[in-house]
Every structure is written in structure tokens, then in C-alpha cells.
Length: 167
Image (cartoon, rainbow, N blue to C red; front, side, top):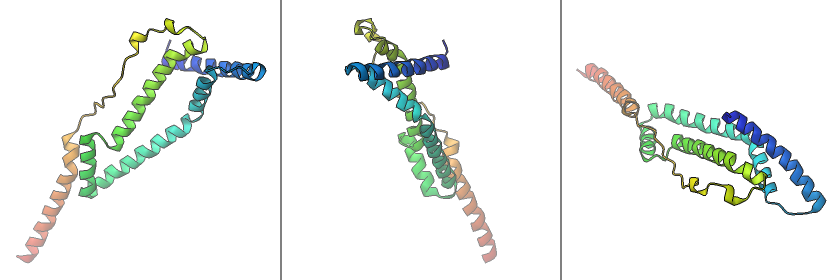
């Protein structure tokens, strides 16, 4: 099964199960943990559009800061230091995407067990290990130093023009 098919199957199961759980809750007034997961998933689905808009806005802000860094060396220095320390906006966006992918994978693994009221002994708990996010983004030295080279070249050209006028 492809990822899209698994996601669609999960959406159908959640919608169906959400209706059933809501009906059970209203009729029997019985508490079930599955309603929490169904409502959480439906909220995630509903907010996906605004989440994408937010990520696009943050990416455009980051792009604007990069372009501004070509003109202002102090901004470029801050961007370079953030990139080296892996604390910049690009790193934050990559981390958020990695976290989203991790939660999607976990959801697709656990939700069928949760919504089928399967026994927890069925789950292979040895596969559930601690995951650590590693940002493997490489630092391109040309991109780091290019704005400085532009500024130095511009200042050298201007100083040569000024020097020729004085002599």
C-alpha cells in the first residue's frame, strides 16, 4: 500500500470511528479513549491548510532575510552563525517537517490497533525506540562567503574610483 492510500484509509477509519464513538458516547454515556485520538486526528486534518500557509510564510520570511543578508553584512553574519549552530529558521522548518513525518508514521502504525481495540500485547514494542532528529544539511562555503565577497569587491571598486579622483 502506498503512503497516500494508508493516509486515506486512516482518514476513513477515523471518520467512521469518530461517528461510532460519538454515537456510543451519546447513547451509553460510556467513556472511551478512542474518541480522543479520533478528535485529535480530525483537528490535525482540519488545520493542515493553515499549517501549510504558516510554513510557506515562514519560508518566505527566511528567504527575505537571506536576500537582505546580501546587502547588510550584519544580517549575513547572524544568518551564518545561526546556520552553523543549526538554530536558524531553515533548521526550524526542517525540524518541524521531520517531526510531522515522525508523528504521521507513528499514527499510521498505532491507530489501527487503537481503533480496533486490539490488545497491547499485539504491538511489537521492541520496534518502538527513541528517535533523534539529525539535520544533515551541509554548509555551502560559497554561499556563506559570497555576500562578503560582493561587499568587499564593491568597496574596493569605490575606493579605487575615489583614489583616482584624489590623484
